[in-house]
Amino acid sequence: MVKKYGSALLGIAISAGFLFLALRRVSLAQVAEAVARVKLLWLGPMIGVVAADLFVRSWRWRFLLSAREDKEGPIPLATLIKLEAIGLAMNNVLFMRLGEFARAYLAGLELGVSGVYALATVFVERALDIMSLLSLFVVAAGYCPDTIPSSWRVVAALVVAGLAAGLVVVSAVDRSLEKGGVWEAWLSKAPRGLGELVRKLALGSRALRSWRVAVPAALLSLSLWLIDAVIYWFAWRAMGLAPDLGYGRSVVVLSTAAAASALPTAPGAFGTFEQFVKTLLVSWQVPAPQALAYAGIVHLVCYLTVTLLGIVFLYQMGHSFGSLGRAARGEPA
Image (cartoon, rainbow, N blue to C red; front, top):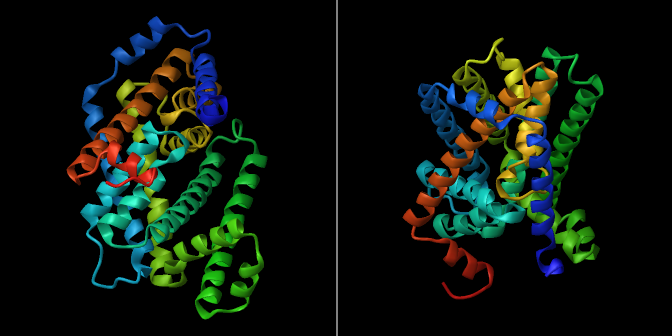
């Protein structure tokens, strides 16, 4: 059992540990009091930002999918919005971020593209997300030099440079593979797993070989996280916390929350999200109960909005968790 469910048990243990740390020495009565003071009128704008996030993600994905062999016309944005929501929702309820694979599989069914190609574009999306988020972190961290060590900014900048170089390399590899060049000969001798991974990444980066795609994709990636930071500022206003968080610090909080969500935890990153955000806010002299309430409110609004939308879209498109499970096991639909 441990061998079969080891990763799931590890994720649950990590989440439980961080949740314990988040709740440790915090008065739940004071947390409830802080939540009770939330101005519900701000929830609408927060949900609207989540919807805007899905729109921008889908618009970017359409650019990345533009190198597909089928050139019948642009993919309907509404379909991509549904697939993005489904993928994020399934990440929220399944272990090991299986929502990304589910989105690629459904893209193959709904869009008539190769599932492997769709999955490769998802890999490129994640690289663009990390680059954009860390770039914004480098800039925003300058607003709080007493909290964020300068070495963190240097490391973040190096990661961005490394990922950018990686995308350039895989794009060059894709061009070489397309022409049957030296990379094809090298990959034919490489271990099978490594060769397939390089081919998938190269395939997904094909659209980035055009500046007409690469520039909009990069700008949309930046816009995506700039939009998401607004949720954190809205939540601050909803709770009536003082002094004003400010947009720059909202980006820092967003970066912290994203780092927490990237850890191998239980679905939804509950526990890690709250502890990371609470720790950051406490370092800014925010009382622990209010910091924990703030983290919980942001987390629940984002989680519930995306998860409910994704589940609705999944069934609306004629699929279900059961049908996806059967497909994963190679059984007939």
